[in-house]
Image 1 (cartoon, rainbow, N blue to C red):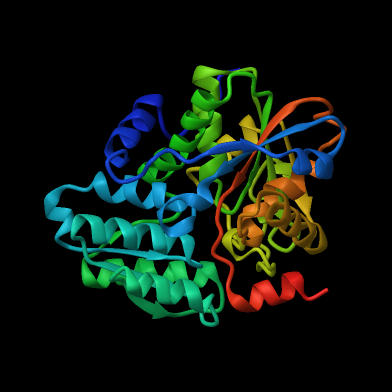
Image 2 (cartoon, rainbow, N blue to C red):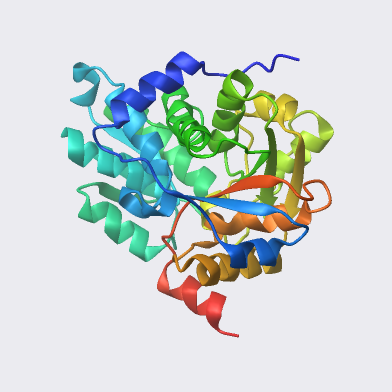
Length: 324
């Protein structure tokens, strides 16, 4: 069955061409210790998006969105709501392209990410108790100040940017069986479905959400959007509580499976990813690995890719991760 996606392969290739001058391909590596951690004879490939500028995959999304803007729109400036990595990506793009950037974060957000966004030249504003409330404020600012909104999910150029990582993976791994991808808004997973459906349809896509932010998982199970659950998880990069019109239909129809990872499972996977790869991993960057362990029976003996999507853990989170 042909899965309807919000972007085409032409969109993905165009995004890749636009971002290539700014972002080198990220490494894809296998670690014997990580294979042991997962078990079931699974070979685990790790896509090191943490090694990109801003230390997170979302720099692809930000660069793809801002490079797609017309000069007249760039001069208006851009605004986004974020817990950090999307804002870092947009701020990086703004610095590289000379575009003013405003970022809205919730109160109590990761202070290191806030500082890094300011360091890239962004105006950082605090509003709301969570990601979704920060996004609502960014939408208000876009309307009232005439800026261009760069939503972290509901933006075709953002999704095309996320899809470029799967395009790279297919060039780096010829015998891939599956991908297990963390879902916050779904740009990574929808990008993967788009690319794989076109270029390697035998490769399956599985999704993982944090049990503390399960709205899209519960909607997937129901086959339709359900009442949002306020997010509460250590994995702030996937701490979303809403369903997104550009990604949910593709997730609903295109995923092979979907699981939830508990806080303890995410913490264990974060420690394992850091220990086995010697790369600092933020909790959201290990959600895919946590999900893969839960999917061992389905993926026995397969070659599976997970995304180390970010390494921007703040000091307080690191203390919690390694305190015992």
